[in-house]
Length: 469
Image (cartoon, rainbow, N blue to C red; front, side, top):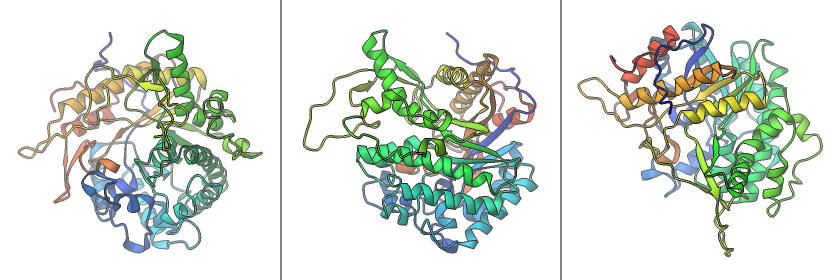
């Protein structure tokens, strides 16, 4: 069995190495300079929703420390930085009045990246929906997709001459299923039909935003979307387990890649959700609107899934929805092996497998790994932060990417999650993904050994050995 510890592999000179963050996870300053409340402000301030009641009110204080943070990433020698724009900083209530201070902040930020030779990769939506839009129904409603397109137009007009790549949405799977299906993410609703409606209107928002952006940004700018697609494996050769994997794939991957890249939803997705909805919210013309040409497919990937056919739960007056509505009889299998502090299996073969599968399904489409990383709590000792487990994880997964390229996958970039420790959503500050350690009391940034390792990779394009840092 391949262990993916293969230093010395070299990437092409034009391969992009970068880091990634998200606005609510690092910025803080939730009421400063005209920013309005988002669903994550509301959710994190609701008792019992997040670990220890922790919020993103301060996070990494990057709203005030952005220049030194840019200097930090420049010192790492990265090619590009993927960051998100907070919708409520731009249009505090989601529609209507524009907050010029928010646009000015991100304009200065983009200029700061360019001055340091770092390509700006903008994500327009990383889960911080303006609360006013949620109060009006949120992503289950068509009006939210239309509001998103108007927001995209506004940001595109302000920054479109300087941004390298525009990513419309980050992980619509999480926004729809975790936010509306099971309620463990903002806005905290547990309604499987609302989750499926959100799936469609997130897709629609993507398509409308791509059209809007293309009309106002530089012709050279690239259009993208980031999905957290799953590597789904059946637990056995039993046809029932294979069908369970097919169902899981349809609801986790197909309902996004199908309309986005083919202009159609998978028939199996309609079949397994037929007891919940007839999907009549998909109107004539929607699929054409969603199916817009994109230049890059973003992929966030952390761990594979193994599933089997299970027994549906007995009906109750208030049934608990599954994460993917309609998949109540699909059970996840706990595979033995090393796990990160998120409890996620470390198995880089799953990343290689998915990349090769995507090349087969969508030949030639350029793919960027927009997030990949691991949570380990490695403290600072005597001014240094040794994190051998993270280096090992990154080395093995970057090797998986290189092996997939050798097998024909058109992978053109890799972004480590994350530039620094940050607010990890409902887990608060308990999970540390950063190649940079953050002391949340003092806001001191300390590069971990993994940052030194990644810096060498970014500068040389050759996978370094795992020791010597």
